Length: 340
Image (spheres, rainbow, N blue to C red):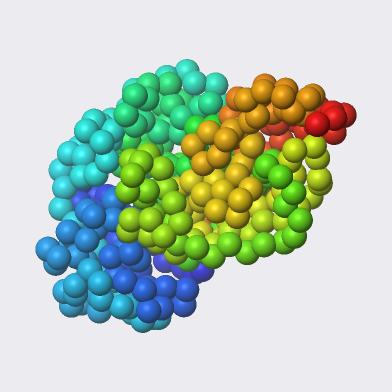
């Protein structure tokens, strides 16, 4: 990824979205609307498709259909109007300007370009239905006021997210150039994301799960392999340690779909322990000491352990790691000394 010259602004003073980029090798042959929505992670796919139809997204200077297949090296120009405050996507009120709040943040790293947080399980990353206050985003703009002007109001500085029940490393941009460069790195799969998890049963071999993920048409909040509007998704997982009732596994995400690790692991028949949305959660009763340990965890046993990318300022490779969350460590210790 090149960092030469001034990066484009994605949101000007009038609220207009401005972005220019080149189709990367990993995007060759993919749909224009999908590529544009990944480069604009804070705008929904349906909204981006409307922008393409309206002529706000140009490929090599020409208006194309949302499903047009792009080629490596082609240039895309996005110029979409807005007023800087009107939400263009998400739930009503989700993207209104936030109030700074004293939400405790465990900062692993900070510099003028970005901040890296060790997110605890239970903390919501950004506002959504039922979670207007007390989010990580509220805490970010309290500690780093400049982040309130980075990206859309409801997701200040955020270039990726973790589920509420997932602990671990999360990166936020402190400047708009940094956000754009990080968003590009995510879109071009130049970000390495490694997780640790406890899964149910014996996960006996290294696996590569290459199944597209989309919404479950029968359950509004769930996702499934080959669901509605499915998008390509790729996950690697491998066993680290066999334990009573479970296996401790390492996970590498090559794409960043919502609930990806949870959906893919459940698809293999080994749902993440404690995940009541995609699996049984924990044994309701019995299971001896191991079952009791899993019931005490009360959240999916999933931890974002490491993230690596090129720094948006220097371009140098950087890697950040979050220690395994205390409740996860306690569960591991209990399982290692337990009998099923």
